[in-house]
Amino acid sequence: MASTKFAHSTPFLVTASPRLEPPPLSCKHLYQHHTNAHTSIPAMSSLYGVIERANKASLLDEYARLWKLFIEGIDEIVGYVREEDCIKLQWDVKWFHCETVNKKGDEVRRITIVRSNNYLAADGISHIPSPAEACKIAFQKLLAANADKFPAFSLWKVTEEADQEYCPIHLADPGVNVLPLSIPLPLRGVLGVLTVGVHLNVYRVKEEDGKETIDQIWVSHRSKDPNYSYPGMLDQIVAGGADTNDTIDGQLAPCKTLAREAREEAGLTIDHQTRQVFFEEMGGDDGDKTKKMRIHVGTVERASSITFFDLKDESAGDLYNKHLEPGLRIVYDLKITNPSFRPKKMESAIERFEPMGVPQVTESLNSNRWKPNCGLVMLDFMVRHGLVTKHDESRFERIKKDLHRPLCFAFLTELHRITKGW
Image 1 (tube, helix red, strand yellow):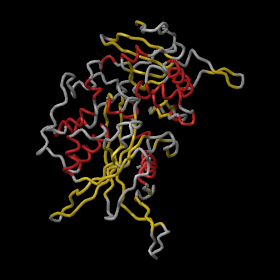
Image 2 (cartoon, one colour):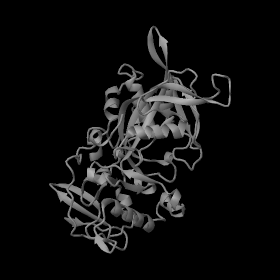
Image 3 (cartoon, helix red, strand yellow):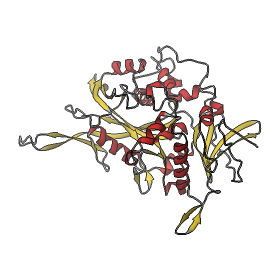
Image 4 (cartoon, rainbow, N blue to C red):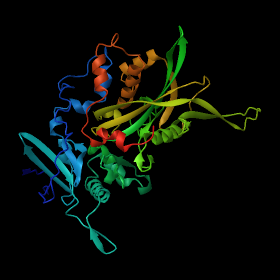
């Protein structure tokens, strides 16, 4: 065992806290058979470039040097930290312990959020902090000590507490999920914590020779305001991250996330029991234009999921450039059955919605116009619906495989056990 010192005045302490062994899914082979670190993104004769743009972390020469983040007492990886960020950050040695260990010829780099050497007082009684308490304190100290080192940290410092955004930490350990863990948004990408979200593909079909073919796909144009991430890029009309409140019986429910995002972004209502989707228009059957009509749109189907590991670039905006994002996206489809349907944008982060034909969508993917993980979702949709096939895509089998990157998070292997709903 060798302790590691970083380029600031206080070295990491070697503590007596128990060392957590990497879990069985530590993925020693991660990306070994999926990427070539020296291969640049090819000319877009193939849609495989969509895969590469959303998996830039897998192209890093330094991938093997990423540090694994753990919470003491929880035997699963929480996140990944880049070497240069480990060196750049000033860590509170009371709450963070870092070490490099050589195990059977492999170097294991670990950062552990410490619990056992810290005691909190409540009602005059000292106790070891819970994982949630330890994370809250450790993250606050990390942000405060490094407020001038990352643009997102600086903004957080001057943001009103009520407006500060937190994101869930998704773990498989059932004991942890009783009291959900969260992380400040600016830290999520620096510590490479898994993101989990839902996306909804909305499309219309037409009849050709007695068969249904996809006619149009509704897409969202993100706001060009540079205060938003990925300004001006394309997106699904409904997409968003899972929240700690999106639960059924205390377990994460992606369908709850979908219903919330559909309402907030596109004004759509999803019936939880039937999965039927509705929108409202002014004007009743009696001609009264002051009344709202509830109009059926179609029925949501859970269709797929994709995984990726990105290193965000300048297209994400200054706040999140060089942040890591390992991610899971749960994908739903909505076939429009009402020809009068026109979704209405409900948020300032959206510039407009637009129906695109399949050739337009293909061209936009080729032209790098999509937010990276949204491009993956769209490519997955096109593969599933036969819009991209082995006959017109030279790397078809590789695309199908690499839409599902191996990621070393226990949450992913336990997804069906620890989530509820459709």
